[in-house]
Length: 261
Ligand code: F6R
Image (cartoon, rainbow, N blue to C red; front, side, top):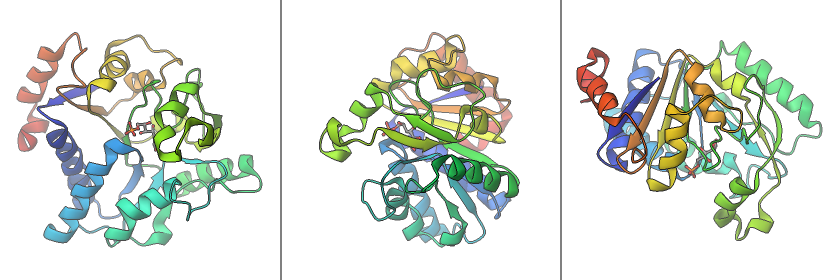
C-alpha cells in the first residue's frame, strides 16, 4: 500500500484523475471500477474536462460501479445510475452499453449479484478500481463485519452510513435500508485500487484503514492485503496518520511518482 498526501482536496482529486487518464491512455479498453459519493464528484469533473480539452477517449472503456441502492430505479435522481449519468457518462464519449451498475430493482437480487460477478469475470476483471471510504470504514457498501472474502451481494446499511447519506434523501428515514455491493473479495481482485479520501471527517477512519490492524469491522483495512493499492488523501484527511513523514518521503523518492510530483 502507498499513501500519498496532497496539499488540498483539489490536488488530491487531480492526482486520482491523472492516474485514471494515464491508465486509460495506455489501455483504451480499460475496465474501470467506479464509485459514487461527494468525494468522487471532483474527479469526474476533471475527467470530463480532460475529455473536452485533451480528447481523453472513453469510447472503448468498460465500467463497473461498486454499488446501487435496492429499490431505486435508474431514473430516480438519488440512484447511483443517475449519479453516474449526471457526473460522467452523459458528459464523455462512453458507450452506455459498456457501463454497468447492479440493478437495484431486479426481481431476484441474489441472481442479479451472481450475474454481476459473472459479467466482471467475462470482461477480464477490473483493471483499476476507484474507491471512497465511508465514516464507518466501508468500501463500496461493505459495512462493518463484512467478510473479507465477500462477493457481490445484498447488504444492510449500517446506521452510520444511513446517517452519512441522509442529506440526499431528505432525512435518514428515507434512506434505502439495503444495497447491492461488490464484496471485499471482489474489490481485492481488481488489478489496481485507488482510494481517495478528503476532509478531516475522514482522518480517523483513513488512519485506521492504512495503519490499523486488518479487521472486518473496517472493510477498508482489507486493502492492506492488496498487492497494488494507492491511498490518496489531502492534508485534512492525513491528520491522524502516525507515519506521514514516511509517506511523503516515498512520494518524493519513488520513480513511479516522478511525473505526478
Ligand atoms: C459509493 C461508495 C461509498 C462511498 C463512501 C464515501 O459508491 O462506494 O463507499 O465512496 O461512502 O462517500 P463520500 O464521498 O460521499 O464521503
